[in-house]
Length: 336
Image 1 (cartoon, rainbow, N blue to C red):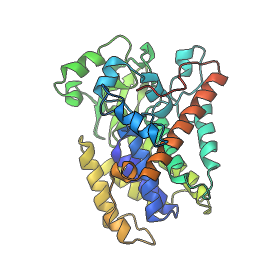
Image 2 (image 1 turned 30 degrees about the vertical axis):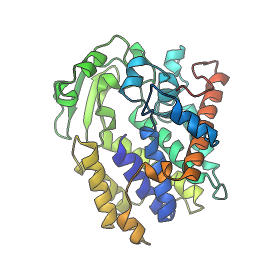
Image 3 (image 1 turned 60 degrees about the vertical axis):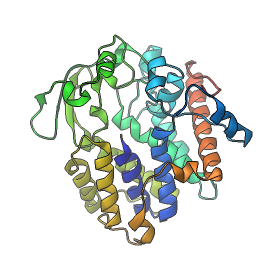
């Protein structure tokens, strides 16, 4: 999933669940920042050491191109934060495949349901956890490591019309580097399916993974329903689930905002939030001006500390669950 879901949809679901504008923004920003929290200078540890001197234990939850190419810390990034292992199957690689509704996904949901509003870090815990939880729908059947289980054959995709075969170049452009990665023997994550899993309006299929086709909008709606119920529970609201009207509003966005450009989809979501398209009962000036910015977290020393505290806590929790299942792929210390 991309910025339009991790920030836009999460903000809307949080407001519908009766979180105030400020807390909804923190939840949604934390959710998206998981994707933007990468090492901007992989050749120096100065920034990490400066944060550590202030009691902030930096851990990265995403990789830039250099990190992906070198493989430095790949497991510590992709497995705990984007491809939550399903713990199903016989081999370690099979158990590392991400699956929606898996035993570990259910345990993560239960963990988030235990979040209480008297915990000053609740927005950060929810945002980080919901990013990982939502990705179990988008990234299902792929693993956050290099493995032949991630190989994709006969990729076919369409913008809601009849499924027609497309050249991979339609999605990956002329990037020779990415083409080489796609063709490698042991792909990482869903790179062999390029961006198909994360685009809400796409209908696609591939041999070995989704032979009968996968309509992303249905997967995103199912994720939204479960996330909304979770948020209602944490906010101490009656757990009603999404109304039919709310589902219609979301589906119009998932299916109707069709752009390969992530930022264009995000901008349309934010524009609709500003116009109260989602019909917040207590719509206010904060809603009318809200937007995603990494500086919301990085520009506030307390928020920065709270985010990284919760990020490390989530990592340690996933590592503990994997080790309980005799899977020792995550290291305890951050990989700079």
